[in-house]
Amino acid sequence: MRFTGSFVPFVVLSMLPFAFSCQTLQPETAQPETAVAIPAAETAQDQALSKSVRARLLADKKVDLSGIKVVSNSGTVYLSGTVRSLDARQQAIKLAWEVRGVQSVVNSLEVQ
Picture (cartoon, one colour):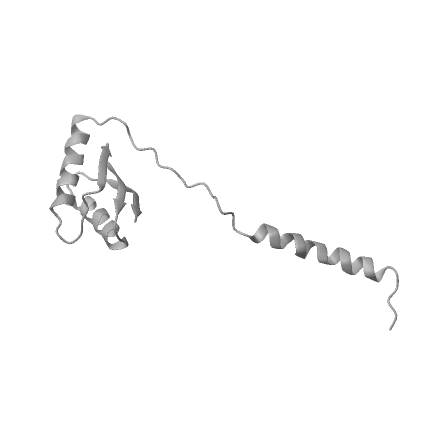
């Protein structure tokens, strides 16, 4: 079987999309994370809510939640800092939701 002159360029050109598409399918190593803006100032009511949530976290004896920073803004509680496990992170979120006055919880906790 003999290949014609137009068949070889056709094969080469048809393979180009596959060669270049593989490069675009590779995940980027440095993808930007979505950052949450944590309020800088709290009202007296926000401070009271943060204090209640912080006390609830520190009272828990199941896991160490002492590395968590709590900030509130109009019923929204922002949790940031580090915890040692996924279970600790879930426990912190659960405890924050249980505090009276909490309307939403924003989780920015990192697991070590």
